[in-house]
Amino acid sequence: MRGRGVREKVREEIGKENAMGDAPRVAASSYLNTAPLIWSFVRGARRGDVELLTDAAPSRCAELLARGEAEAALVPVIEYQRLPETAVVPGVCVGARAEVQSVVLVTRGAPLEDIASVALDTSSRTSAALVEVIFREFVGHAPHLAPSEPNLTEMLCAHDAALLIGDPAMTFPREGLRVYDMAGLWRSFTGLGFVFAMWMAHESAGARVEKIDFAGARDEGLARVEEIASEYERELGRPCNELVRYLRENICFKLDEEMRAGLELFFRLAHKHRVTDADRPLKFFSPRE
Image 1 (spheres, one colour):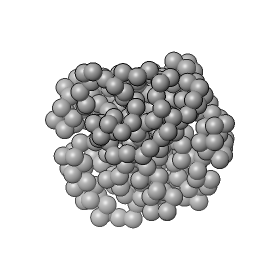
Image 2 (cartoon, helix red, strand yellow):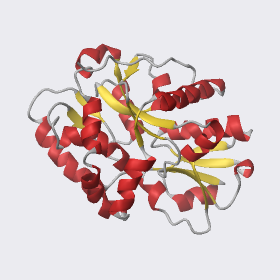
Image 3 (cartoon, one colour):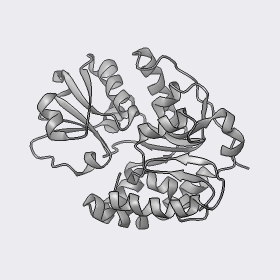
Image 4 (spheres, one colour):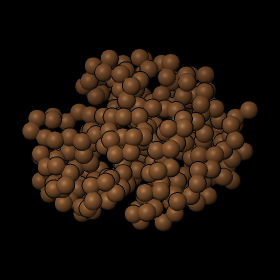
C-alpha cells in the first residue's frame, strides 16, 4: 500500500544508492504489499545490487518494462500475456490464498448479479482483469467496465460498483456499503489462491536478471515485517499490528504449486473470455546460483 511519506524517504535512500554504479534497473511500486520484496534492495544486504525505480503504480511498472526502461519489474500478472518476450522470476509473487483486503469491489448493497457497471481503479491491470473474469465466468454476465480515478464517492455516483486497490481499498469507511474481497471471491469460486503480481523481465536481459537474488530479498524483507509495518502505520492510519497481520496472513509472497495452479487457471479463463489474446505457458528464469 502506498504511503507518501514512506515513498519520499525510500526515494531519497534509493537515489543515494543509484548514484553508486551501473546496476540493473528494477521497477516496483511502493505499496505496503510490495515493501517486503524491495526492503533488502533499499536498506538490507542487497543494497546497491539494483537501480530501483519505485515511484510508479503497478501498471506503470509494466510500461517501464515494455519500453525497456527497466530490465526487470514487479508487474501485474496479466501483462505476462501481453508482453510476449518476457519470462518470470520463479518462486516469488504478490498474491493471496484467501482474502487479500487490498483489492475490493464495493457497492451500495447490490449483489453481484445486479451489477450492471463497474468503475475500475486501473492502477493494477490484473485486478481489473480479475473483475471481468469473475463476472463472465462465475456470475454469468458482463457489466460495463469504466476506468476511473480511485475516488469511491465519484465512482459509486456513476456506477453500481467500484474496484479499489491499494491504500484506498484498505482505508475507506465501510458503513452502508457492501464490500467484496476479490481474492476471497476467486477462492470461493475456484478453491485456489490468486497471484496479483510477479517479477518479470525481458528474456534478453536474462543474464543480468538471473544474478539478482529476488527470493533472498523477499526472505530478508519478511524478516523485517514489523519494521516495515511501523513505517506505514502513520501513512495508512492503521495500527501496526493490523499491518503486520496483513503482510503475514493476507499476502502470500511465495509461488508454490497451489498459487501457480490459480495463476494458470486465471490465464486460461482470461483467454477464454478474450480478456487477453494469448494463453502463454509460464516461462521462468533459471534460479540464481
